[in-house]
Amino acid sequence: MNGVWEGHATGGVPAAQATVNRWIIGETAKVREAVDEALLAYRFNDAANALYAFTWGKVCDWYVEFAKPLLADPATAAETKATMAWVLDQCLILLHPFMPFVTEELWALTGRREKMLVHGDWPEYLPAELVDPAADREMNWVIGLIEEIRSARAQMHVPVGLQIPMVAIQ
Image (cartoon, rainbow, N blue to C red; front, top):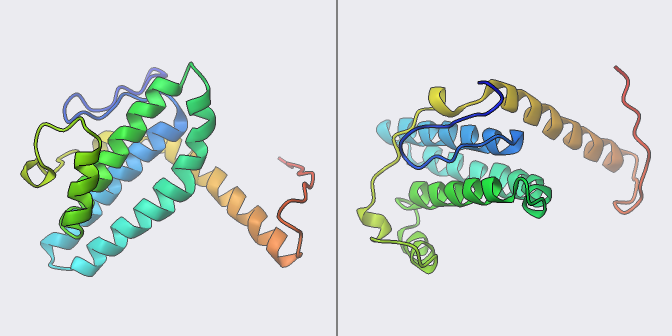
């Protein structure tokens, strides 16, 4: 990958260098594939559940939080804004069959749309083209670490605001 991930040449997928941006692009491609498979099998509940888990669990819970420092850094802000805009657009496109009125309104509110969402094309990118295994591994490790720390804090009844030292043993 030569240190710079170029992304997909078509479909407006942003080129990304930051690990978290490469990760969320791959996660978006994975959920699009899961939604397609569920819809083809008439498993609408599975498609809706996959979108819910992705939108809340990946985008809102993790990506937005991980992106905040990148948005504050002039060196990574433009890339992260482009990635976040693309991911949010993909969320609206994929959610549209399930929530047409809400997604159409949000789509129009951005003010940069040439046509209504209902007239847009369904995305055709493939996970094989967009998933970065190294970014996937790193982000899954970080997320797992944070979840384990939160779990240990809860089990030990450590107050949320209390800072505790962490020691990494290799």
